[in-house]
Image 1 (tube, rainbow, N blue to C red):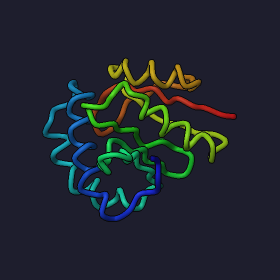
Image 2 (cartoon, rainbow, N blue to C red):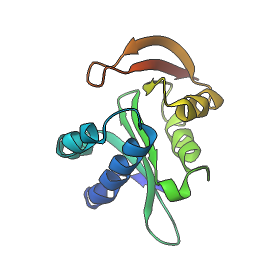
Image 3 (cartoon, helix red, strand yellow):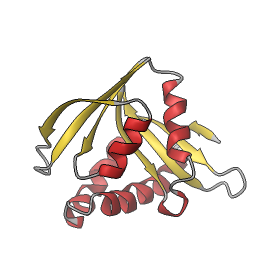
Image 4 (spheres, rainbow, N blue to C red):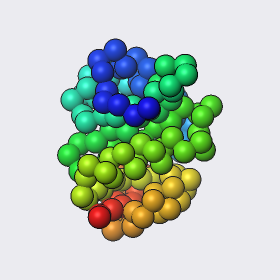
Length: 142
């Protein structure tokens, strides 16, 4: 089930955020993610967030965060990745948005392939000022 974020979801989604960032962004030191954990925890509730909650276990298995029409990230618990949860989260927000953008690290080829399958196209390339890593800006529109 996909539903809007509730305050008591914060601990679960922050653990997913940390675990997946460290794994997916192996090219960025783990310290970057742990150093930014508290800052993200404080600002995350201000974003537009939807969570995927497993109907049987009531466990949060993933979430998507947006700031207006910009996807800040899609995060799915590692043990349930490749089961369509990310796609369901993305389809949910596609049903309520007309255009969206996102930034994705060029070295995160799995994410790039996912977004391209979902009809996002690369609009430009830049360097992330916090990590000094090259990234793509990708866009989607109805």
